[in-house]
Length: 194
Length: 105
Image (cartoon, rainbow over all chains, first blue to last red; front, side, top):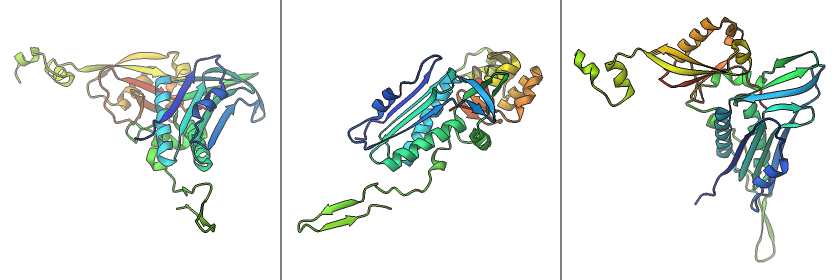
């Protein structure tokens, strides 16, 4: 029996703070030796302009679908235990977290690589928008990741991310080479890298 | 097919459309972010002729809201919550979303 896939995807309505501990707890598991996280926070300047706040909106049902699709893609590329992705809507003041991702895996390489993939893909394909508010104006931001991805969206049937196409060839080494103690107390070092 | 067959109820909407001579579909259009600013709307019902593509619908919208030209070149479309290319034929009750450049995260 395959392990139940634990993916938690949440889009929080305005004025809800992200409780990072909740999502870290969600992905924690005795089998998972690694938890990788990413928190995106509102920073105070952009190109020399002082940012007052960011305001987020989303096409919520499609955003949830897209994030779930990205989670599936991540699972096909890395050996993962649990995934949690949460994004706030509404106003997110400077210093606060707008997006949080937590990934657990047996080994850290999978967790770290998948975590990077999840945020990169979110920024390329999930229908969420932010408006940057300055003291003297506001502007809808555009992710460069989306600009690069735009022409490919809609080419694959119903997939928000590049799915299997993106699976990179990467070494699936275990982080700790297995050392086997044999009966006569020699220690044989077996590297499990492929 | 003769005229009397038009009154026969059929099994699926395609048959009904042909036999009852329905010539249009009704879809719902959603506008987000900059598109919402430009049109002043978050959503709009749109009637399109049977067999229209997503691109046909978009052209109708741009004709109705010329200000959408601002994002015409950098937006994408979604149909029923999935990204869609311009040649997909829309069906009755479809939901078409105008997706300006995204900026999540």
